[in-house]
Image (cartoon, rainbow, N blue to C red; front, side, top):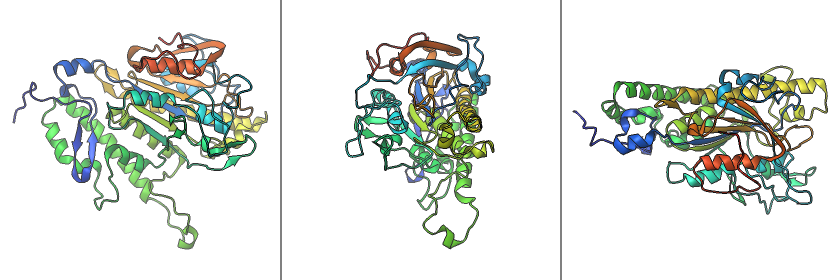
Length: 445
């Protein structure tokens, strides 16, 4: 059967429907859109992503010594080498409020919730938490009617609910960087399988263990007949990536070493737990990639760890230990050495994510070209808890609205919220300020 291109048109929100309510999104394909819609796709939608790493960085090895496009990568930023032309290194951006206000911006817990907000959190023991609307949720609200999910929130660790007596603040603030309203932090999904199901429909527990691809196979075959040869290749690559992720998730769920039942009683992990922290990070970033590739959402945040995370980094190097313990290095050489190794590792994982996005083409551009991917931390130094000169990277070109590949050093009192204002304006919001911003951050274009 021949299809007339004038009568056949799909948009980016089209999904392949399958059994049991399962659906599968589609990657960009050039033969899907015609006329005005095809012209519109020349300016593909922007995405905003955030990769958050807790507990600060080694402040002695982060900042490049020179600026501009010819800067020399610092020790911590060496993993950027293969993709440095796609990343901005931004120095001297701060979250510091006026003294005397009982709204802490630094510290493990208050600083975490404040990272994407910028006006501080209310010092609370838990009953009356208050922060502000985060930059990702401002962007998500702007795009809420354009995608299946307004936003996607991911993490690797469970929530804490106690009170930190040292900071005199509830640990609830350390669980989320995304705030829908000033009193509503958003819960995060930490199990890869459940995050996958959120994107593509529930594929487990329905009495049908087939892949999401198998459940939508009829729709896939029908689509393959309609698209050109290049788009069939794109579709095959995309389906292979979905299948590969499914296999990794299935392996993580099923390939557990058996142990005595008595030892497991009350301690059995929930389904979908990755077998290692490294695999957990990779799976979550694969899910973010698929979310952007299928246009299921254009806004996603991923917390590599919660506030005060004690994740053991000895899997990277035996010199490492728990992240929180290394962050409180007290200038001890052995702790700084392990801390440094962990810092370089997390930058490397960020680079891997950017490379995934860079490899997926949308016409003449890539998903990374049409994205703003922030990497950051709510502390400069995990030992001192300072929120001055925060470690901030910004990957992507925002559809041509950002000129990456440089190290930019701003005046010491520059607000991080100025960057958030600039990002929101590039995302299409017609606003003049964002929380504690004083002006749009210059020099990005």
